[in-house]
Amino acid sequence: VTDVAPTDVDPEVDPELVWSDIRLALAIERLGFPVVAQAVGLARTTARDQRQPTTPDGIVTAALRLLPAPATGLRQVVNATGALLHTNLGRAPLSQAARDALQQAAGLVDLEIDLSTGSTGVRGRSAMAALAAAVPDAQAAHVVNNNAAAILLAATTLAQDREIVISRGEMIEIGEGFRLPVMLTSTGARLREIGTTNRTSLADYATAIGSDTAFILRVHPTNFAVTGFTSSVPVAELATLDVPVVVNLGSGLLAPDPVLPDEPDVASALRDGAALVTTSADKLIGGPQAGLLFGRADVVARLRRHPVARALRPDKLTLAALEATLRDPDTPTRKALYADATRLRERAEQIADTLREKSVDATAVPTMSALGGGAPRVLSSYALSLPPGYLAHLLQGSPTIVGRVEAGRCLLDLRTVPPQVDDIIVASVLAIAGHR
Ligand SMILES: *Cc1c(COP(=O)(O)O)cnc(C)c1O
Image (cartoon, rainbow, N blue to C red; front, side, top):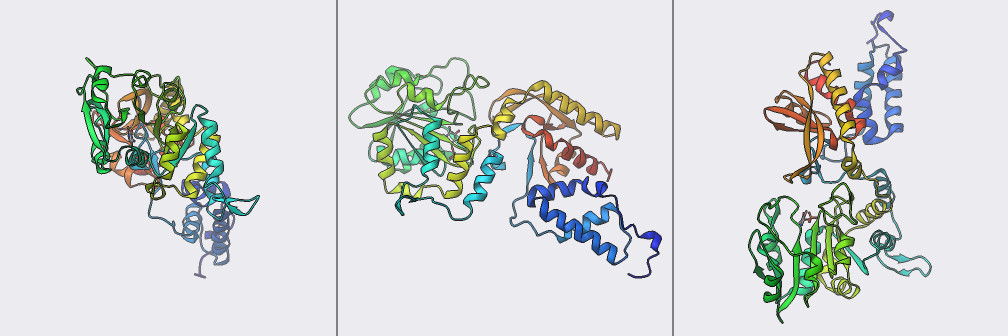
């Protein structure tokens, strides 16, 4: 195009207008600043050389076309559901330290070599050391692919052709039809069901155990609550019986946390006498998908030696991200858990005010957040409330913003949204409302 009048050409488009475009911020998040800056520079010089009319929007659009396509079909999403650990969204978002560790482990690393001798060494030595430091009450620890694998390994190793004693109140389904009792019996273990849905006593356990008992299994229900006329037996009392106690904690606090007074933790279960405790690494620990086993040295050694252990072992990326998470536990999950409700209200009101100025029907409303999808809502929070039609549009946006509909309104719960994403929410809602 050569017949453009010189007045149409703006060789010095205001860089500030270019860089304030939300699409570039998202591209930097995905690809890093240098790659994006290079594309913007090229877009500007191309426009200048071809003497084309340019606007900030035109520069950004041209720059985006120069960027490499995403290497995966997975789309980035903002979790505004209010469920801290949403399994459908990949559970815990990793800390910066864990992301850096992933990057480093992507190449070749001393995963399983002793550098002082050059011969085979302990696999994931430094991750194992981080686990030991995080839970000093454990004599030994082991890492597998997820918590389901941890329970599978325990049942396969300790209870094949033998009995697992379990309360009827703990025969749970976790998600997507994953039923714990079915997985346990698939290992060749037999279940000895005791007690009732709401009440199980120490005497129920004592009468059930015998020479065929491999272990007692305690399962902490994470996605439902039984209230009213209930009773269960504390681990400390079960440990007085003459069989090992295996505890599946699910969510996986490593130590007691004042924000979650009712959430059991690994250290306390071990101190109460559990032989083995299993947790997910991508729930409250806030790390990558993995299953952690802590417990007595002799029990963990048996699990490690079982042939199935090899099929359940995690890769170098998981071990690297797990170690980084354990060494610096200030994860996005922890930040969401500890977010102050007053600050969440201020953020919600500020976003709502900005949107109302542009005539969007937006308000700030109190709400409750949960630890997981479908879990009881236990944390007070604040949400941006929009007309319900926004939900589907926000799901189609880039980035995708996942909220929920409650009482006929689309709620975006800010507890699970990092504060630096507030501007993206404003920009996305305005774009849907037709302001761009
Ligand atoms: C989440 C959960 C599991 C499954 O853990 P994965 O790491 O997803 O395999 C098992 N038991 C309980 C109680 C849970 O909450």
